[in-house]
Image (cartoon, rainbow, N blue to C red; front, side, top):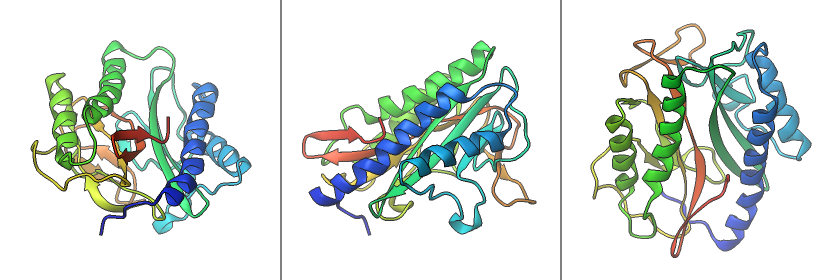
Length: 248
């Protein structure tokens, strides 16, 4: 069932969403080559908890980290550990913060040092996919209009669109209805309504759309062909006259 948030609930969601925004801005300033992914996770934990919030990724279905820290070919759910971030890498940091009984969710992909032009284009186009997907969105918009626009922009730029992982509703729970895929047919899907809160999160690759999950940890999702991937996400509120990005 899709949850329609009241004005009071929306007010309560604003704080954890703002904490996600500010945490990622903090990480952007601090992340550098030579760090381990665990050190990035430590930054996320320190910042979120300093705001009186909870990193709700930690312990979710047994997930061990406060953030998902995904390097290069890892699409999502990269478990923080001893992997060293190298000059030229791209690193996706996906976080959630819980406060006031509600959750915010956002992700950014950071370019570390001397990143190739091809990888920089991937990161840029992935972010563009989000904003192009949101163009003209408001009450009455078919949900998959977002999906179709994301897919079109990615594929026009020669990139692949991940199928196995999608965006989602959010509120009291990290994952609520509806699912928000990054591919689909324009004019289809549920109609958006004012008060809906959704996470739109393009996951785009330099190669194909297929992914594989690490059998050992059960979490780390990589591109099947080893190509690099980028991820960009915001929590979005559908308003009576359009939408508002709560994590910007």
